[in-house]
Length: 306
Picture 1: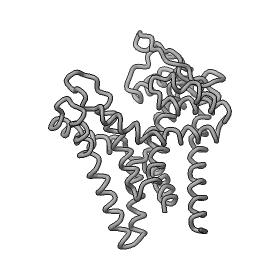
Picture 2: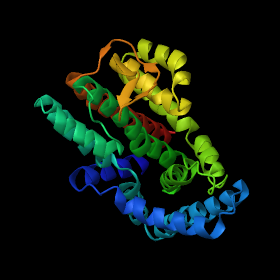
Picture 3: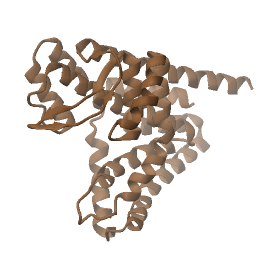
Picture 4: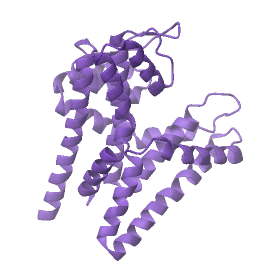
């Protein structure tokens, strides 16, 4: 059932993609409501708020799934598809990447910079075409993990659609609460960041392994082992370094953004990023996705035969 739910959700999302804000806005409002009521600057209050934000939707998703399965498995399958459709946003990031790719292919670097700035939420003024391509590849690799591969793995590992709901909510809260550093906020967001790191530990490594298998395996493993720890976000560096090695492209490297130099570690080996490597990135992500679906098919067949 998991495999067919994933395939149906992917097809549905390809033909009728949902805007990212459809999930982010209501969850964000609820997160702000909990924070305004429970934040006393301590991490234990963040724990209570996190449980209040995550547990009810996860338990509700599980309850509806088992209730529908008791009526007929087909309804349970339909519920899985709906939840995956809401939580697994392949097209929520791919259109950004596609538009930037097309702009660079047409030689319209200013347009590509504008699109990249809208995607990343920060200025891309003065970036060269190679730097735009490099940043777009980094964003695509990270987004494919957060919006596709990690959601799939959590969905498969936990019963019903619980895993998909858990991962997406935990990720949103880690971004909304865990990244705030202002003094007024205190340590409220500390727990959301810590628990998401635990939840994301296995998915990060599974995504990196998939990139290595469908790309240049030797370079991907080498970059994973030697470069991931040098990235500012060490965990995300696992996916980016493996993806860069699998593609044979150099990512990271210092950038001049908004008149200031941003010091970034170098990831990957090989050539400078360009439009052709952006096309290769699309192929890498799709091959990794097909690999995961084939593995699910084999596991399903083995279970059925057993």
